[in-house]
Structures are given as C-alpha cells and as structure tokens.
Image 1: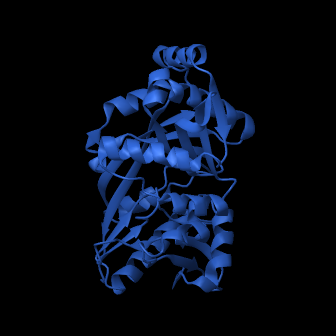
Image 2 (image 1 turned 90 degrees about the vertical axis):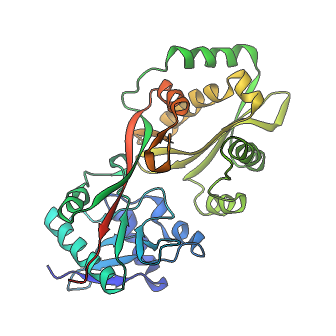
Length: 327
C-alpha cells in the first residue's frame, strides 16, 4: 500500500478527534483540545496517514523535541505517544506506515525519532504492532520507567502495613472524602509544597492549565481529596486522576505533614479504588504512576514500596530512539 503522509493542521481537527475515538489506542490525551493546550511549548509535528483514496487509517501524534531541533518526538509533551490505528491496520500495514513516516521526517531534516509507545494497559484491543516495527527499524531502548498497576478484575490485597495505616486513619481521625474541584487550589498548594521541598521541582502542569483541562475534560480528570472533619476547607492528602476507557491513572499524589501522620493517603486510596470500581466497572487497571527518575536508572524504593503495598505491580513506560535517514 502506498500510504499518504499529511502534516496535521487545524482544518483536520474534527477528523483527527474522530479517528482518536475510533482507534484501538486512543485516549483523551490525544484529543486536540488536550494536545494543543501547551502548543506554545511543544511545536506540533503530528501526521495523518491516509490511503490512496484519502481515507484516514492512522494518526501519529508528535512534536519537535524542545531543545533538540533535529529530533522529533511522539510525544515529549505527553505521558506516552504511539501510533493510533483503526482496527483494519495489520502488522504489515503498520510497518509500511512507519517506513513512510520515518522517510517523511528524514526529508524534513530530522535525524532522530524519539518514540514512547503506549503501555498495553491503555489499549482497547491488542495493539503492539509498533513494538515489532521498532525492532525492524533498529530502534534503541533509551529509557525504561516502571509504574505500579492494580488489575481491578483480580486485585492483590493490600499489605498488612497499608491495612494497618487505613485502620489507624479510620480510628484516630475524622476524615472526609471529597471528590470535585472545590479543593483544587488547596490540593495544588500541598502538591507544590511537597514537590519543591522533596525534589526541588514544581508540578508539570500549572494550576491554571489543570483548571483549563478539567473544564475541557470534566469526565476524564477527577480530583479526590481527604480533609479533616473539623477543617473541611484544608486538604491533607489528595490525588488527581486521569480516567481513560481502560485505565485510571494517578497523575499527581500529595500528602502534607498532617496527612502523613494520620495515614490519610492510605485511607484515601482505599476509598478511591473502591469508588472507581463502583463508578467505572469498565476500567480494568488502576495505575499509580512511575517510581523512577533519570530515565529509569534510579528507583525510588520508598515510593514503589508504598504503591506495591496497595497491590500494584510493574508495567513499563519505555522510550526508544530511531535514527532517520533520507536513503
């Protein structure tokens, strides 16, 4: 098949979003209303793949790598990237599409493709043809982060330590579970304080960006917090969830000193996991997020120990480099 490669532009927005929804791998992160919120920081280099009759079969979300003008990334501004394909796309077609895409980028002057395949838990149907193609194209594994994931269809039980902390929180504290955006600013203050104090960094998103994204995707982005009954306006622990068709991903977690002392985060996760199973029975995986730094070369043992205590086990978030050639 002679696949046609077209750079994305705003006139293709409706078509793009429609294919995202129909694809085997699409999540709301690939909707243009999400992708374009930080277009000022990530110059878009996305592609649309069509057949010789002009029918769209695949999308390639991508951007120019910030600070590396010769590198194109799928996708530096998102948790994961990857090719989005309709059900008709076979392994052979995927290989042909990738060859056309890499040739296109090489002709545009790029020398390297940075590719972050979507972890399988987000697939609505088996979709790892791209991993085979990476092998065929000589891609090199660049980094590997490990996340902790619960299979909600057959979850492992909490560890005794996590259960003990939940019981402590229930016995010694009058905690309130709050779901919604009323406490977003309070949570963000706790989150930013924890990140700056412990890691000297700020959240990837600003508070205004999160407010914007919640307004655009109110069914997909949820804030869950724990507060003391006698101070319901103050968040002592919280988590921001990104909810897709098959995964509830914890985008941010934070607990202040009061929350840590009373076990509020353990109590909160016990409640959140139960609420997700009840409100979203179609969701199979609860993803706590990665516990690695520096491209996966450093494992935060304390952090992953906590997540594994809730029953989470490993799923990898990888990134690869593909050399590009005009030949």
